[in-house]
Image 1 (tube, rainbow, N blue to C red):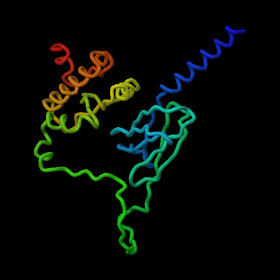
Image 2: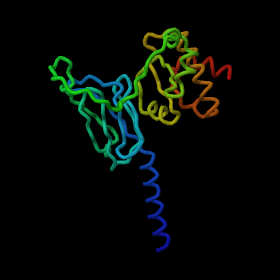
Image 3: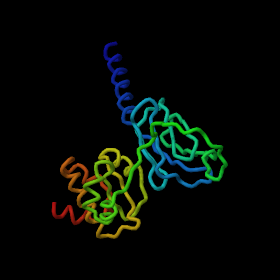
Image 4: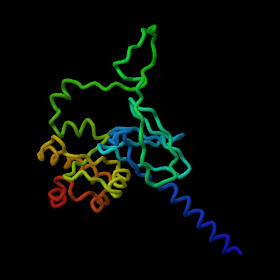
Length: 215
């Protein structure tokens, strides 16, 4: 009888452990089917949050009985239970914010700003194409790794969550910029995580092979 109780306790503990490490994946798009990059996802009642990438894709840790709140400027918010491992979310446009609407004048009153306003300094503009400057000033918020093929899979989302890294398309950056920036990110990963990241990173990360040969 004691062994049977112990067996059920172990099953319960394993289920709880699985729930705590469960990752939900999904795509956020508008009513026309276009992906919405930069949409915010929040696990209701917690501080756990994430953002969609350029393809509208996201991944976030959540239990099956928790709710995910999706928000983006210019759209109505939506709340969905995280019971499925894969979620497709469609946000409806909030036309009340259209700028061609005629809005009657309202009395001006002082209010606290809801969002932080980020300004670009002359120094930022001057160093816009300087990878060392950009890494030094912005890597704490979202260190990136430029990849040659920006087609993300489940393992890529898991890597981003585990190592707090963002895979990025090269877009208008040149190879020299991406190689220099990635080299700094690789050094950051090596210093913080030793070598554990090397077997999990995307192999098409720009400049990776040269870095591993030297380190």
